[in-house]
Image (cartoon, rainbow, N blue to C red; front, top):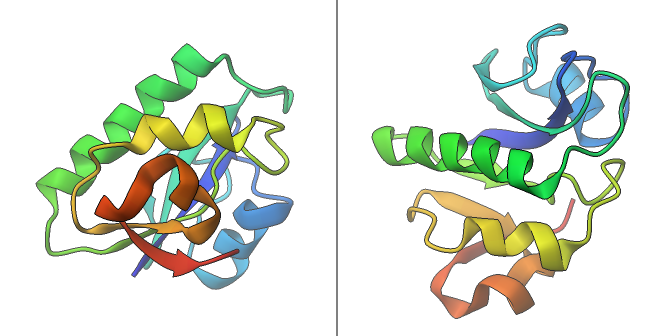
Length: 125
């Protein structure tokens, strides 16, 4: 399963889910977006200076991730609450960006109120 985590545009994976991805899922320091290592996918939610990206910019990265997931139905994606921890965004703003995600994307159960019963959940990070 691919561990999907929030990243910054500098690709510095020093805290939170990004550090977990670096230590346990093959994330690559300096790579800010996309599939990397043996089981991680970075989704930018912060600037180079670790400030939250505007929601419309995050949506562009979410759309790219969902496109990638659709093109790779052979992979499964464990999506964390990207942008909602260190990224300081609200779950109610970020989770709805994933409505309509393909069946190979699984989400933190804390997003169930925003995504409903049509998605699969994996627990909580």
